[in-house]
Length: 284
Image (cartoon, rainbow, N blue to C red):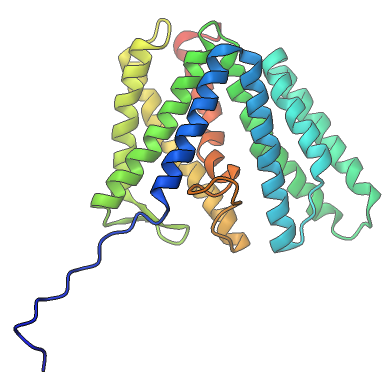
C-alpha cells in the first residue's frame, strides 16, 4: 500500500530531444558565415552554397550506399552540382537546366564503368539526388542576382528559420495532435500553426523593410507559403530517413545532424520564394 505521506512523483519534463546549447552555437556560427559572405561579395556566398551542396550530396549518397546498397555516382554529382549552382547564378534558369541535363548525362555515363547489375537503380537515385539537392539550390543563387539579391536571400533564410523555430517552440509547448505520425511523430498540427503565424509576421516585416517595392501583405502570402513548403520539405526528408532507417543524414553539425538535416526545409522552399519574389517585385 503506497505511503500517503510521500509526495506524488512529479511528471517528467518535456525534453527538447537534442543538445540545445550545441545546436544554438552551431546555428549562430553558420549564420555569421552566411551573412558575412552574403553582404561582402556575392560570389563568395555562391561558393558557400556550392560547398553545402557538395557536402549534402556526399551525405545523401553515402547513406544510400550504406543502408540500401544504392551506389549513386558521387563524382559527377558533386562536380555537376557545383556547376549547377554557378550556372544558375551566371546564366539564370536556362543555365541551371542545361547544367542539370549535363549532370544527368554524366551520371548515366559514369555508372557505365561498373557492372550492369543495379544500373537503373543507381542512375535513378543519382538523377533524384541531382534534382533534390543542387537543382533546387540554384534558386537561391538566382535570387542573389537581383539588385537587392542579398536582402532577398536573407529574407528566404530568415523566414525558413523562423518557420522552423515557430513550429518547434509552439509544438513543444502546446502540441497535442500529431500532424503526420507515421512520417514524423514529433510534428504536431499546433506546431504547423505556430510555423504559419511566426512566418507570416516575419514575412510582413521583411517585405516592408528589406525588399525594394515590397508590401506587407505580400509578406503575409510569402510567410504562409514558406511555412507550408518548409514543413513539406522536412516531412519529405523524414520519409527518406525512415526508409533508410536512420535518425540523421550525418553528424557534421553538433545538435543538428548533417548538412542535409539543415537543408531539408530550405531546398524545397527556395523555388517557392524565388517565384513569389518574381511575381511580387520582379526579377531585377
